[in-house]
Image 1 (cartoon, protein in one colour):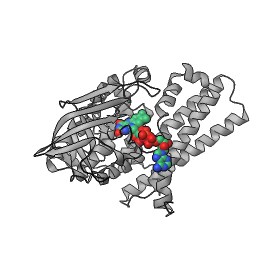
Image 2 (image 1 turned 60 degrees about the horizontal axis):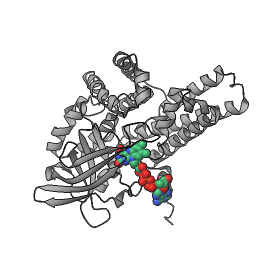
Image 3 (image 1 turned 90 degrees about the vertical axis):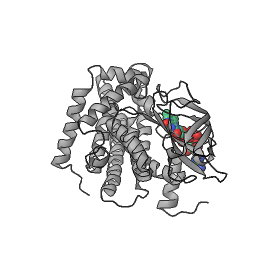
Image 4 (image 1 turned 90 degrees about the horizontal axis):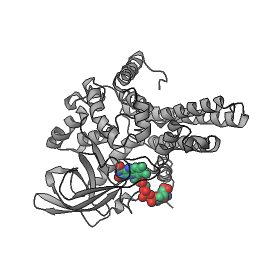
Length: 379
Ligand SMILES: Cc1cc2nc3c(=O)[nH]c(=O)nc-3n(C[C@H](O)[C@H](O)[C@H](O)COP(=O)(O)OP(=O)(O)OC[C@H]3O[C@@H](n4cnc5c(N)ncnc54)[C@H](O)[C@@H]3O)c2cc1C
């Protein structure tokens, strides 16, 4: 593995930074901090911003040209992700479209579905949400109860989803439904969010606005042509989707920026010359750098078309542990930052509070490493 960036990759990163400089409004930090990237305002902004990125060939660089990409290498996608995350994710929820919804449709979608959806995603104007979790089906996703009953050429969907980020502004939902009596009889449907019978109810919490939504389905009619893959075979598709999500968010990048802010704050308060604080900060840098290298290893494997393995789980565990330790560091040495004293650190803390939960918890990642990576027995 080569640890340095090539001149072409550096040039690409510079292009992304220039686009960010040109496209983000002067009040971006204030706009973003006050609302969060999942808020209604940020989501609407993302429609304009992503469309502009698309015009510059910077939205889906790694996608094949037939679907609106530049057939660039996966590294470009990761450089893009690092820069966007560091800038506060101005793509809003559209990072999901690019990271895994589009790729899932490329692999499992029908020609008609590809035609209908991939162009929209690559143009940056369409917002999707992910309707997987239910009140009693989070980690144990196969316990989901939202049901789709087949009637001729359509399904009738009834049930409810929870934690559906971006649902209020989304145009489409990639929805998991139960279609049979066996535990894994799960099917994937593509559902327009303006379908009659869908209702979104939001609630508030520590995580900033826009993530906390419930979505209710009452006799929602979905054509069979909106099904991805075969009926009752959605589990394979979900597994594929989640493998993309694990290393999709470069948390080390923004973690190191937040750590820099902490150091600056401690220096300005004359508290930096404390050996305990310096040791903890040094350990955090080491942890984030280890997470970065593990993530790069997974990307390198993808670029070389090697089969997925538990390195992706390890990379996620390492990233999330570093994030958790940084949050503890902030809470211990700068509690005032979380009480209105430092908006960006407060934002980091709130946004990352659920980081160890969304997309699969660390306990589950460790289970997967134990069983699939180390070959340990289940019991
Ligand atoms: C901010 C936020 C945004 C989200 N956005 C979305 C979204 O857009 N779409 C969506 O579908 N979902 C979303 N989620 C839901 C997320 O995927 C779930 O919260 C997650 O899967 C965990 O499920 P749960 O909350 O039901 O917790 P539980 O499954 O009840 O888990 C609780 C705890 O028990 C542990 N645990 C559970 N089972 C085991 C086991 N077998 N072995 C060891 N430990 C176990 C878990 O690791 C965890 O620590 C979001 C969640 C949050 C917080």
